Image (cartoon, rainbow, N blue to C red):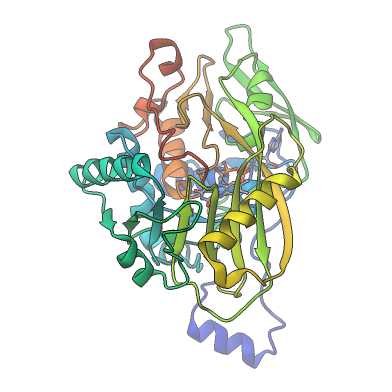
Length: 417
Ligand SMILES: Cc1cc2nc3c(=O)[nH]c(=O)nc-3n(C[C@H](O)[C@H](O)[C@H](O)COP(=O)(O)OP(=O)(O)OC[C@H]3O[C@@H](n4cnc5c(N)ncnc54)[C@H](O)[C@@H]3O)c2cc1C
């Protein structure tokens, strides 16, 4: 794999940039692999990378029905944070935040992780109490999160209006300074390039259409649009389509799939220094390095697999954004889109083994799995390689919906992201 560094850049520039190699080849499926991952989003590509890098399992295929990163990885608003309430979640999400820190260097690919801080606005007494409870709980888990008054929040984010006459006045905010954003496409491309260099085949435009099981019930391989591929280990990381893929193995999953929308404005000069989220008014916003305001909405109220959502949802979001940040009122929106998010009853993911031997799952991240990308990928790889969960993902098993040991993060994940 060519290393991206200054001497390489100079050498390629002297060659008029005509000799850059492709980042990774578009592979054709082989007849058999040691492991197959369904879904080439950040989670699936990352899992393939860690399988090869940390566990020495390099005969791996990642199979994608569309194009690499074309699912939620390429559609999300890229908010990264780890200030979730319960111990299990704090450990899970903070595992990811720690991995984000060195990811660009590890992949030799700039994923543009920017720790600009995530501000979560409190608009009523319930918000204030809930966020302060989160802050105390986070501190006990060694996760940074602090309370700001409305004035301190405005000092941190000057475009924020703290006018007390507003429909939803800002009473204060929780700030996680280590939170921020990353460049979503780079995450997919970086993992794909590094995994491919270790021998992983990335196969695009090839939907998995079935999961074949033997007489003992264990997996034997996947049926795809390009033929059968034999394998004894299948990792499913298919986000909004998880329940469809799990049904191919005869499993019914506790998931509902909803459209979730985002939109971007015309680009403007940098003026918005951090990420701001408001669960109460259903909006969150940051500014991309290109200058566009990246705005996220809440989920639609109905289940659907169409990757677009209802117009009134984004209208509602923009009304809230204009109220909280009056300075953006005259800006034009460039485009909006939707992704399908898979939501569990307790708003926490399912990451681990399944009742089917050789079948592993990573799903249910709902509106907030981008932040978990390196952590989820690392833990899925561990679980597949060792055929047992890592202590961090052990609580996020499927069995919790039978045993009742739920990890209820509905407040942390209320709207989104
Ligand atoms: C609008 C929006 C905003 C969001 N904002 C945030 C945010 O700010 N922060 C955050 O943390 N999270 C956010 N999320 C959630 C986040 O995007 C996802 O949780 C995360 O990207 C999931 O990653 P993934 O790799 O599992 O899924 P994906 O990137 O969706 O990858 C799954 C892949 O599986 C493929 N696939 C599905 N079925 C099959 C099949 N049968 N055969 C082969 N391939 C298949 C799909 O085509 C897809 O490419 C947001 C989501 C949306 C939609």
